[in-house]
Image (cartoon, rainbow, N blue to C red; front, side, top):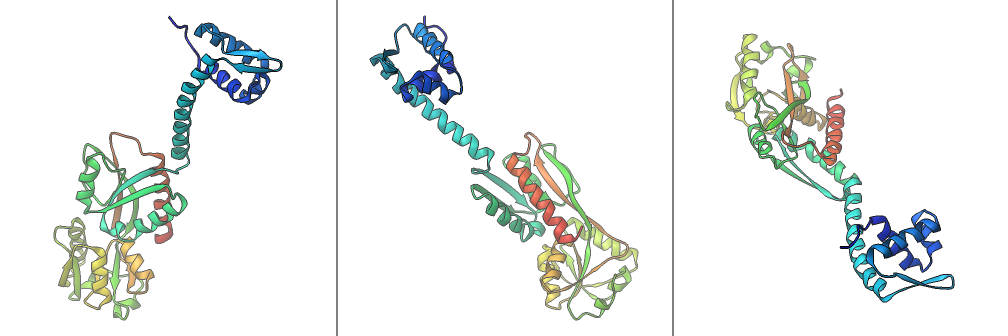
Amino acid sequence: MLARLTHRQIEAFRAVMETGKVTSAAVVLGTTQPSVSKLIADLERAAGFEMFERQGRQVVPTPEARALYEEVERAFVGMTEISRVIEDIRDFRTGSLLIAGMPALALKLLPDVIAEFIADEPGITVSLRIRSSQAVLRHLSSQQFDLGFAALDNDHPAVLRRELFKAPMLAVLPLSHELGRKTMLLPGDFDQRPFIALGAEIGTRSETDAFLLAGGARPRIVAEAQLSASICELVAAGAGISIVEPVTATHFGNLGKILVRPLSPAQPFRYDLLLPATRQPSRIADQFLKLVEARFDALLGV
């Protein structure tokens, strides 16, 4: 039975084959000549045949050594490839990121972050699915997605949910609207005014209704829309006023398409980060999240 070989013996053998000298092999391996000689002797003893013949200061491989070297090279080529893959993963030169996001974030904020991310890490492929918050939750529960961005008031046992960012909802007005003279809007400011509401199936709708009713306001609902972006476009076109989540409101305000005003009392809105419960976030996901958090801070001025 063949005695146990060591990886160091094979490394020494390969180094001697490639350099033709034990002294040169020692330099390549960062060790001493006696250490290399001992490793070769141990390998020969384990193999049961000689590897090299000395001719002056040179060592000449035996036919058996040449045959062994061919197999060793195949193995080392495989190890080199594995090392390259490890380096690529470590340095973000390869990999993928699968994201599901609510429209409020996936229409603008997340694409901006993705563009920044792939500019820095061109080897990473990012896939973005735009879904409702509940659909984002279902996607993450499949454990196939890396990150989810939503606004939820319920949990799923297969998903970790944590607060990503919280900011107050904002009033949005046409550019020439008379309420634009005010620095802050109260519920009563909306009374009997044309109002564009979120669809009844959207969770935030009930919170907005409660805010208005608490102040005795009864706005005239002239349109409904599911997306904050659609509401802001309607406001920009002069169809009415509304209340939407802060990311979309701030974006449209920065574009100069609408006026944005804070509310009193403040109506907090929470953006959630969703993670698959059965595995830890990858280094790629962690890197992406840092950019998302920085983008929130920059957009909302926190």
